[in-house]
Image (cartoon, rainbow, N blue to C red; front, side, top):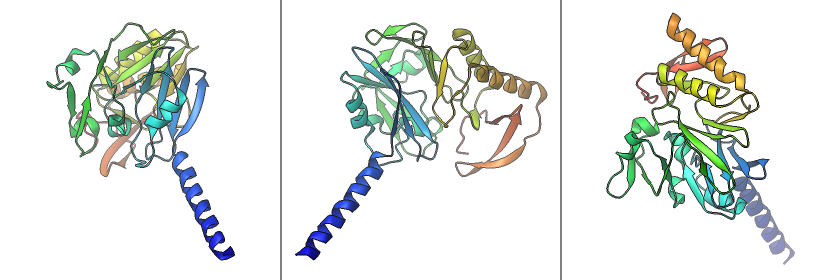
Length: 279
């Protein structure tokens, strides 16, 4: 009997350890009482999503990598807020749209070139080039979010801006009252992926003029937050690259393919005008 009890106890410990490991996939950081960063430190891209909460509704900026098949970011988000949650993507690369279909309310920025792609069922079909994945992604859109103007989540106003350069459909959230900037993949500490040099510089310019050094800048990747001055460092590095056309520093492997990497003034990046980093 004692042996049987010991077996049950050991099984209990194993199940508890497995459950703890699963729950630890997501690390929650409370930036303030209405703003959360949800990290995936074990993901291949070290992703972060952001939960921006108002009194009437909340906005989840990206839905995670989807690499932890047993994780439940929807349940996690619901446990943090008591208001309806709408999902908005910073862009459509695979590591930002995982778990999307767990969210019944998905918003699309009110950009005409995107809105015209909705089919009769209000779905947008993402290509391999857009998602950087051979999988088929279909997003059911329920809401539209205005661009370049504040809208209210309930005693909290935010704005969404189209900031292409990393991808054609990249977006940034600006919270002027909280002095927050959520930049997705436009800027972070690490290897940047550049699709369009002109658009990338214009997007950075736009953000530089929208905010100032008092803003906290949160990216979708990495462990280190950005300073306001980092936006201009990236812009100047891309401008210098555009003007001088230097040789690549080296070749690296990205998603199983060889890519040329450049480093200008300490800013590492890959420039691929096709935007298809899979090839």
